[in-house]
Image (cartoon, rainbow, N blue to C red; front, side, top):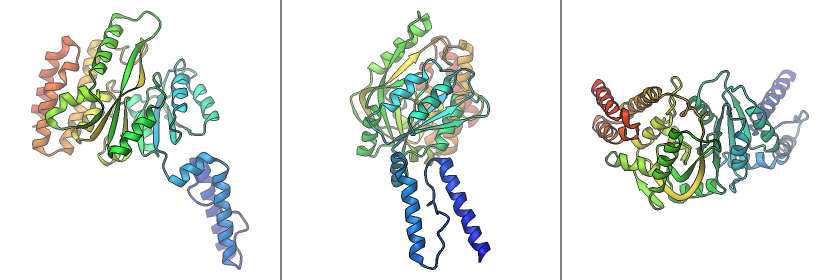
Length: 363
């Protein structure tokens, strides 16, 4: 009998320690004097333990009661010491409070994580995740997806910022219309030092695309309107709120092989292949920063071209696995028509030829 009591006590302590590790009670905390002749004493001890575990922290109580926060905001952190404070402050200031913030340490060499830990000490909605070595933005986002507990997921780059109230508006749109994805507008801006010609052109291009965003409302995606869907939704991950069940149920993730720069491209095309229910908002929700030190602005045109090819190859492999042959063929045709125009002009013809060659290889 004593061995059995000791075993139960060890089990209760293990549950308590796991509860502290994850930040959310996964099992009632059972205090030491819980065994007795009266069964009511056992129930009373268990109830007391639950109250003690949840009332100490209102945020934990709310998550424990609802099981999942409404939104998980995933923020990869790498060499952004000058910007991470603004990014996290914009998330913490959102009117929707029922969120968690996942900061993924991708092993930068500056003081970015010192700022993150300071914010985490002030806000218990922030959770810290870490890689053993630098693995790139795409895998950092996948790490966040795997650890997220939210009903919906939002990806914010650590050098960008949210505008007030946008998470609440996006979440309300998904709940009201049962959509899989809700997208908002954004504004691209340049750093204060004199920008390069390429950066000015990028800002003009992004803002011109954004200005053409249609009026607010639901949108149906199909293989026949892929080009229009890209223009309306924008081929980026950081202006959208996603249903976590939609992404996980369809196996949608960022490329996991190597460090692909244009990781948003396959992520977006995988979504479109699954024909999501989309709701478009007219509200501007994200301030997108264009800076010389960013990943996309620090590589040559040839390297950008190679990364576009790798990104598209990842999307095509997914399409071949997930879709029936006739539907996959329609997606191929739509991609070959719509996608090359997003390449730099000198590479468009060559890239279109490569897309056709990949399609032939897949047949």
